[in-house]
Amino acid sequence: VPFDEQRPGIQEKDGKLLYGCVEAGGTKFLCAVGRPGQPWLDRIRIATGAPDPTMDATIAFFKAAQARHGPMAAIGIASFGPLQLDPGAPDWGALQRTPKKGWSGVSPAAILRAIFAIPVGLDTDVNAAAMAEAAEMEKGDHSTLVYITVGTGIGGGAVINGLPLHGFRHPEMGHIIPPRHPLDQDFPGVCPHHGACTEGLASGPAILARWGQKLSDLAADHPAHGIVAWYLAHLAVAVIGMLSPKWIVLGGGVMNTPGLLPRVRAQAARFNAGYFAENADVAEIIQGSALGQEAGLIGALLLARRAAGQAR
Ligand code: ZN
Image 1 (tube, rainbow, N blue to C red):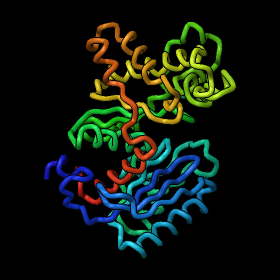
Image 2 (cartoon, rainbow, N blue to C red; image 1 turned 180 degrees about the horizontal axis):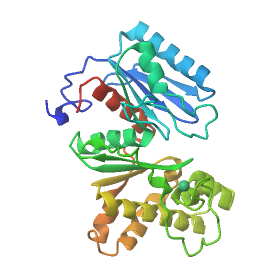
Image 3 (tube, rainbow, N blue to C red; image 1 turned 45 degrees about the vertical axis):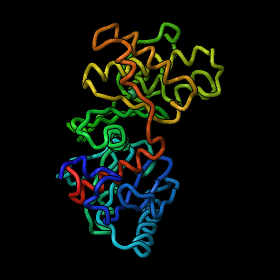
Image 4 (tube, rainbow, N blue to C red; image 1 turned 90 degrees about the vertical axis):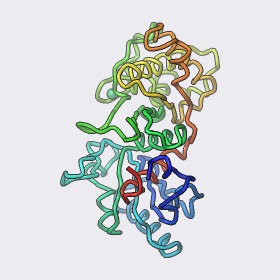
């Protein structure tokens, strides 16, 4: 069955299968159960505390959901990271060196696989969101799309020819070091590893550290808007140079700032300088999120379907 006949809402050969989905974040675990192309049957938001109570609440939710709706075929997890994604590694699924207290070395995926004894699909939250946005924008086409979230951090995931990109580990696009904006020469940046990488200069915490307010609370003519757009546009053009994606989708809380997306597109067109394509076409590659806050959870459902052998 071609992949594009398996997308949510279209001729589901697995249309009766029930999946568990988790978007695991440092602030919250969003859990849901549902079937492709249908509204969620159950969902819950669990505040991320210590690993044991957080995983206990997650397990209790899925047990109750199975009692109500029947057995799940697989679980998909879209997780914060860094993550061990090598399926052959003894610590598969484990969070690596995360600043989130107590979570380093914990593998929610391995815990859920052991408890429920069903396949578990796992990827980064941004790779999962990239899968979901690609399925939404390309209707299941084997597309190449990059998803970048701009919020507490800056993270990027990629779908290459319809499959999430992995290699040594997974992409960490926010930690690329951009040229400094002319009006932003002195701020040291907030990344604990690199200082002035893109995340260190343009994430929510970097904006707060520099200007004391959220970007959306600063006046529309405040220079912060142009400075943040500059860094995001440099990231977008770097990604175009490396991967030539059909789309770059920008999501996350900072992107809700009115006017930011058009500024990023205009800057990216300028940085392109007529090279990769017509400047207007480069701006067109950069899009807002079609799925918004649902992208991670829908991506988790796509991961669950792959784990269950229902999608390539
Ligand atoms: Zn960094």
